[in-house]
Image 1 (cartoon, rainbow, N blue to C red):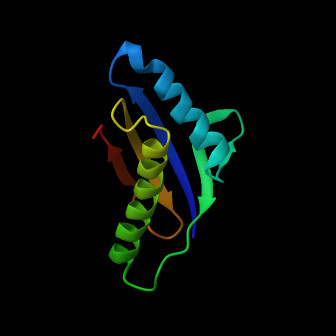
Image 2 (image 1 turned 30 degrees about the horizontal axis):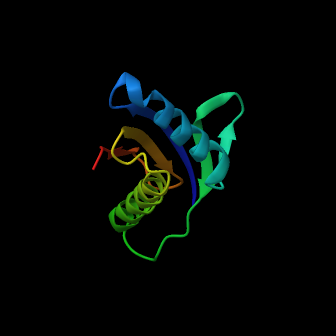
Length: 104
């Protein structure tokens, strides 16, 4: 399944703007997803989903993307200083899926 993820990453405070910048760069350059031309906060990629109902696939897609991003934040040690808000569109699985990650 192809997907498009539009997102924003916000620092919890001004002093964590550097952490947010690191997280944004990582998502654009290290996750294996492609950016949408000059739109740096929209990513495209592919997901492999298990057979199931549309709703089961939506939940799996949301969990898969959320887990990958959260794990990346932990590895970057920014999971306590940045938040993530995104809108995930997966081919054939409309409407958009909201994804949120708040600091641990």
